[in-house]
Image (cartoon, rainbow, N blue to C red; front, side, top):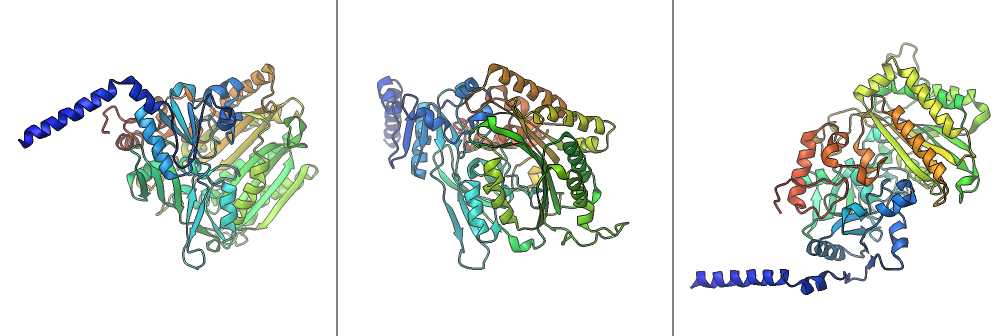
Length: 572
């Protein structure tokens, strides 16, 4: 009797499923519209607000041409949820109605990977801008604090809060980059060589996965490991991160030195050679105290138009934590000339600064704190140096240990550096041709120690490129907003190609090329073919990520050009 009743119920359930599947009208009704119950916005392609919503806060200039932009940034539905429950609704709708999902927190991914592109079929974009809260535990006590940061928080707003409390959460200095994607992709900071990545200080991630479950995932969980470093947007919708912040008081010797000049070919060559020399200095490379960067950007007389370029700013930045050796003015142990750290590592740049006195703009020479530096840079350089008026074509590479040795000590070093100097001069010297260059060279990661391995399988996060020593991030700038001529676009692409050819010298690509500093369009990637370039030739890391993806999103709802794909076997 019981068996017969069970069989009858199974048959009725089966017939119900078949009937629903065979009733196109019923299916169509359920998928014809998405309504969010708490009042969040749902915008479709036919809505008047669609273009404004898909382009707002999106760094669309990196899509090179207007045609590329419109093809790349083309979500079928844009959702702007107000609550976690609304995100659960969106995920259930996507599962039921055959949509994939892309997540945008700030919209700064260079190739538009935080949006949906036409090659991705029916796709819902979830905009996380309303999740812009910051919560600090133990705010009124001297106890160790925990900071909860929503995915929609601007970095500059985070730094403003933390600086006021003399604590820091590490990250980049682009003011309007948001936490959601930044802390999944790298969260590099000007202090990373001393203190690691921002993601290294995360203790908990709140995420909504493809089954609609709201999860708190903690350090030590393999999903936590995958989320932080394993291709943003692959694992679900990140709601918030919890951090253990850095205390400024733990780094009483922190200092910052910078030397800013108007561009000249001779000055650029002198600073670049000194920058490369410092990377090869054992007092620098064998210790984690100092981080160095060399950057340049056009200077605008009128910030509303790219046609007002009055020259190019170039800047050397040196940051000292004293994490290994304390005061920068202390004498280096066993130094043959009894020099201090400042004399050994900073003085060469002071000498160049004085040599090119006629191009000097400003210099900084003194103490700082980690939190103060982050806030001031994001609030000034981070706002002023990201130039929205230009369209952009990116060229990015990284040096690992082997290629660093080739660059620093190989027979082609001088020829290689001179080729960079000559090509940069073509772009930076003429301020009236509507073709400019933005460049950044900076060191990357601290040496291995008992707390941090360069092997991602031994770390709490899956970020795979800890052995990279130097990053070059160059951007060809052209046009003025949506206005540019075909000739200027053609010249910009030619310069992009030529710079790529130069930087290919003994370099390997990295995940930063895909996640944060992309120089390809979404349809030009195939992660299954290119995982070596993004995971540092670590197939074991990539396969572990695929196993986790299969477990948490076997139907590949969270799908984009560079998200982790599930295995062929579906464990869903």
